[in-house]
Length: 181
Ligand code: FES
Image 1 (cartoon, rainbow, N blue to C red):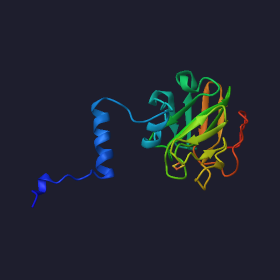
Image 2 (tube, rainbow, N blue to C red; image 1 turned 180 degrees about the vertical axis):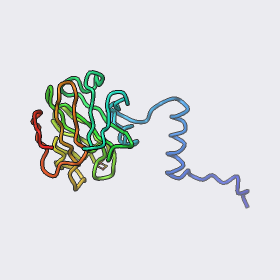
Image 3 (tube, rainbow, N blue to C red; image 1 turned 135 degrees about the horizontal axis):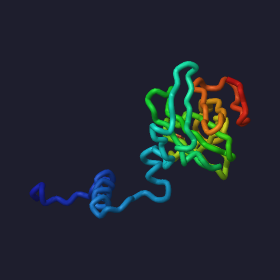
Image 4 (cartoon, rainbow, N blue to C red; image 1 turned 60 degrees about the vertical axis):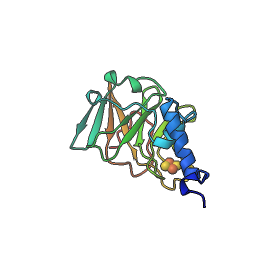
C-alpha cells in the first residue's frame, strides 16, 4: 500500500487559478487587460471631485460645483464623480458640450458597478462585464440593466454648476439655461 503522501493528485481548477494569481502577484504582474481591473473591481477611472470643489445646500436640496476649482469639468467631454455621504446617492457629472452638464446616478441599475462617461458615444457605460449603457438623461439603452438611472436637473450659474438633488421626474433637459426647478 502506498503512503498517502506519496500519491500524486492533479490540482483542482480552483487551486490552479489560486496558484496562478499568487505567482502573478509575487511577480508584480496585473492579470487584467484593457479595462479588466475596472470590470473586476467595479470601480471606474473617473476622478472624484475633491471636497473644496463643491458645496451642498439643504433647502432646496442642491449641489453647487465651483467650476473654477474642478478642472475635470472645465472642458467638453470632462466628467467627475461625487462620493459624498450627504448626497442621496453617488453621482457622476459629465459635460457633453462646453457649458452643458448632466448629472446621473453613478451606480449601474443592474448590479451597482460604477458608470463612466463615454463622450464619443454621448452616453454612460457600466464598467462591469455586463456593460449596460445609458443615455445622458439616464434612460437605459442596452445591457442587462432594466431600469433607468436617476437624472438630476442641472443649471449653469456663472462659474457655478448647480445640481438639484431630487431626481427629475421626467426627462432631463440639456438646456443649460433651464429653470425647471
Ligand atoms: S452592474 Fe452594470 S451591467 Fe451589471
